[in-house]
Amino acid sequence: MKHKKEKKSQDFKLNITAIIDCMVILISYTLVSASFIAMGAVDINFYNNQPPPPSTQNQKSSPPEVNVTVNLRSQRELDIIITGKIEKKFRIPAKDSEWDLDMLAKRLDQIKTKFKDIKVITITAQDSIQYREVVGAIEAAQKKFPGIWLGEQT
Image 1: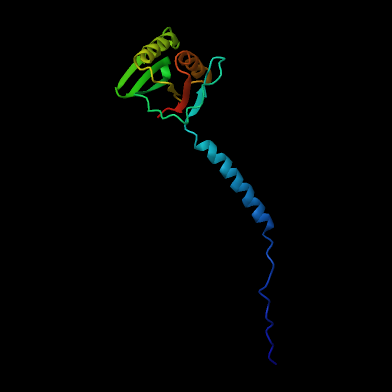
Image 2: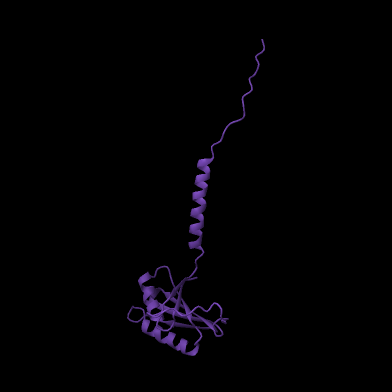
């Protein structure tokens, strides 16, 4: 006697609700975290208890003649790098094993006097520098520059 093979049904129901829920959560997490990764510099505006200046979006503004970057380096050294119309680099050595923020303020004052159109400078620090030390440099720089960007040192 021959046995007939029974055909097994290939039809089945796949419940993908849980997979879709997981994908929605993963996509939202990816989008939120991607916005933080893209941020290369943080804009810090100080207005010294004054209202912020009116919006200049309607006005055409030319880029500044030079860009100024202050690098906080190990061994308590500060580098001021000017790029653009002129290329200069100043190194401010440590004073009694501490940051020489007075000299930083004097140098930035000289730069501001020479290039009056500079409104923003960038402050960067090596990974080993503590944040409170960066804040000290920000406080020294905010006396002359209302806009400060915190950047990543390359």
